[in-house]
Image 1: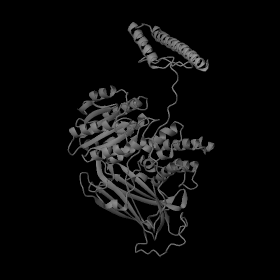
Image 2: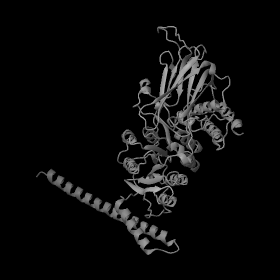
Image 3: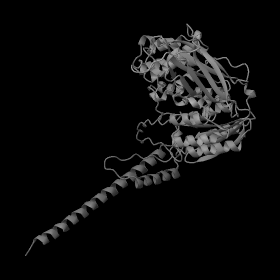
Image 4: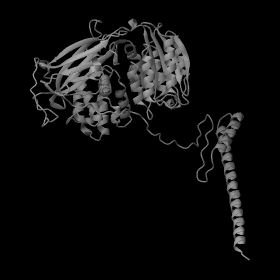
Length: 578
């Protein structure tokens, strides 16, 4: 008799029996684990309630149901049992939250390169009135964090400050043009060429009626104190400045968008403030839907010959609906044609999307600011917003043609994301920056004069050389500006020669301030363009500026220089301890 099949059958029977027994034992362990978790949850829920002065039986029962639901949805673990947190309460048994991963987003860019004048004599760019980079960098330095290089935009660092340019005496030209040339503090063989424009000023009472839509991010990511609570407090500062002829609407968005406050007179401040106080954070972030609804409300309440603006306040963490930056830019660009501008205000840290907020403001004919504390909220929304909102010149472009017989090399400091093609300057269909009443904008070029010995680029060995001749040997450059009066389709041109005879032997306080801010930005980005200048040299330069500082911004700037020096490990203890 062949016993092999019989032995095989018996073996299979025994193996099946063992597996069934093992499964029963595992099922028994699972049931025991679930029962243990359920009892633990009930005890914790009851314990939490018994610690209160007046126990609420219904609440205890609700907690027990929640505990049972937790057990049903959570797989048991023989190693770690998840802590239970009652719905709507903070349990003393909750495990400490792990530090959130930093997902802040900044658009990558490289510093403008040195240009050889004989090869490329023309530089063209759009103005930029944004200031968000300065306060965002300040937030990181104050938190003891070295800012990432891409968060530092030199033009926004410089334009955070008021340079005290004289305003134009007539509104026929909406802004004055101010220029200066002096030696660069980091290289005496180089010169800095400053171009500053200042918009005419308007009394608050003369500003046209405003139609403002607050577009507020109330998603779950906005719950921390430096986000929605700070946002609400900041907007309250602006409410106090509203006039009876102004109208305010409030649109919020989380998973979906909604109208919280229909257009309300600025005279009805209590209603506006109550609407702000009711805002709470929760849910996902459908920013695209919020933007679309905000523009619709702005159009419904459009004021002809008035100020029409959407103010978007967010951490930029869009995660549902349209959240791709390029798609959002297209949405905003389509809407700006209606005469409604977009201001973006950034809040918070850890997930802040600077890239999106800054670029949306650029395409939305508005401005971008970052609010890191209530003082900044007051500055942006109460002190500056009235001038920011009233646009006095649109599509403002700057073009500089350098004289190759006088200037060997040049470099534009900042404005990397605002550069234009040479032909864009005369094309009135190309979008550019706006300037508001009383605003000033500053741009700096670092230039190397022919024969100075400060050239950074070696001449080509095999290039054809020809002597450069010109009939204007005293001109360093020709400065051109184009702008449109609000509502006009055709631009107007301003031209101003920059003369070699205008080079200052000693820089003005204005130039020293601009140079110190440019060097600050460069050192934060790695110090590739500031020569041998160190943090202590920069501190001395900034401290030598003698200009009014009624708000304390320059004193604060010196403190930020000290903090940056510490964080980069190059601090001079004696210098900083002054």
